[in-house]
Length: 372
Ligand code: NAD
Image (cartoon, rainbow, N blue to C red; front, side, top):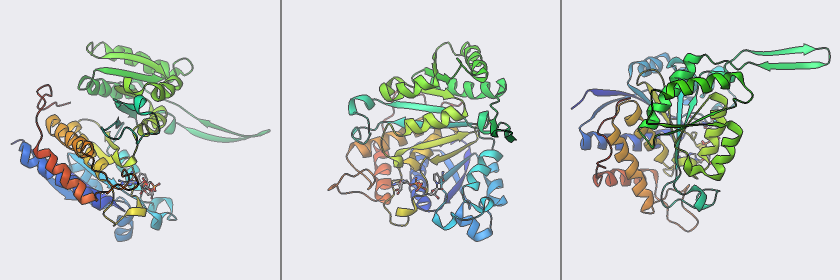
């Protein structure tokens, strides 16, 4: 048995505790099947933490996260706290965690699961085979540059500054190459190098780093073209790496290629193996407490944690294959069930995933543990 991995568990608000329970169930199954060992420590974050201790990200939670090998977060927020002052808003927990853990790489996969070809707004033949990953730079660029508002004689003028140091570009680009190497070995770097100086720097760093990864095929695509190609031929993409604002927009576009928000996981990575793993969706207050939420995005986020923070590639694949199988067998939570289809609840979906994991057969092509 390897070392015990310490996981900070932040269930948060709304459907958070319900979907987190299912992810933990799946991780306990991973312990049984693969001999890994996890130590789960629960922490308060979000609206619940505001109510209990008057702070969306209590110091205790922050130090728990810093001392852990990875953080699993379900979702925070809800109408109860919508009118709170900014420092008492649940979302502050997310911003605080990203900043304190220096999470500079945001990973958002988009995969079309068998049986859900009709859930997308695009034609089934266009989305067939989609399996891509957007790697977005998260802590630099125009969102963090100097901002200014001036009053001129003829009206106001606003300025946002876009700054990237090559160090910041290199660390995210290297990460993307490493990830591409573990997938289909194709990397698309997205920029606006025909206009922006920061993009020209970005492109030169990509070309330099590419020399260390001769096995990965690299292409440069302008962001406007990429937005079009994602709708026209999404299945051709493997890993997309891009700067903060382009990534913000493109990752929302890719999220919608495959249908339900209840299926989309994400990872935010810092230096070394640190990472925060959470579904793309929010706390869904409209269905909280009813046992009907789709836990797939949370379970798939846990699979990303196994892969990216612990290097447990085989266990990650087993979890992903189990979710795939449950969906391929026709089981649907309410968000995916069409009219007249009998939906399974949150807990039942989790049980089905655990059951499907018993039938996991290792793919001989997948290395046992890939440590990045
Ligand atoms: P939301 O993602 O919570 O919900 C949007 C719609 O999708 C709702 O109809 C909801 O029922 C449905 N949905 C979401 N997740 C689902 C799941 N797993 N299974 C089935 N259906 C699901 O977005 P919202 O309603 O705009 O936001 C609700 C709260 O969540 C707000 O307070 C918002 O600030 C917060 N939020 C938090 C995060 C986060 O924690 N990372 C992200 C987005 C929104």
